[in-house]
Length: 197
Image (cartoon, rainbow, N blue to C red; front, side, top):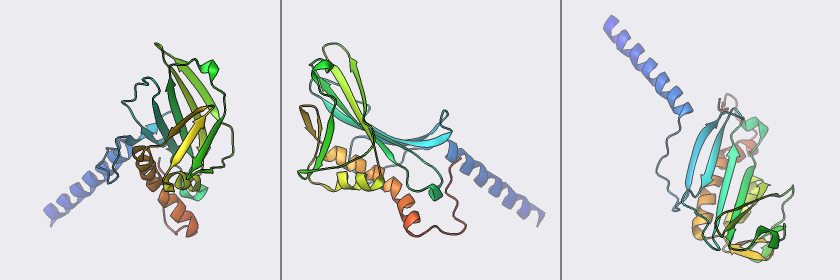
């Protein structure tokens, strides 16, 4: 009897240790979504919260290149669904001074309205300028973007179409936000503890 209790206690302690380790270090798992982006969660020391990032690490700019980058912070579901910071990166051989600082999106030919300031940044390298435009959108807006057959983003006079790869990566990101939205619609569930420490 004593031996059995010892084995049971050891198993319980090992399970708790693995759970704590898993909360601090998130290992990537095979995704059912077909895309080439990397989506991973990590602990942000500065914000003291878990952060999920979508990125294309092999993007090197190149002439007339384009890519996206997105991120959101996890929080207690009682605070609602997290917003998503979505960035569009345009690479061009032209000087950044030649581009107008305005951003617009359209889904299936219809303009997509979004509120809030647009974050602009630019970086000039060897014969190439990478311009970044970022917006903060809701989960519902993210669903609008990913539901279209043709989603375009325009920065000044430069227009780019989100590829199927881009849209599929954003769909996976949206799937990670879905539990927040479902919890909010159901009004929460007693005893649910989703806060990530």
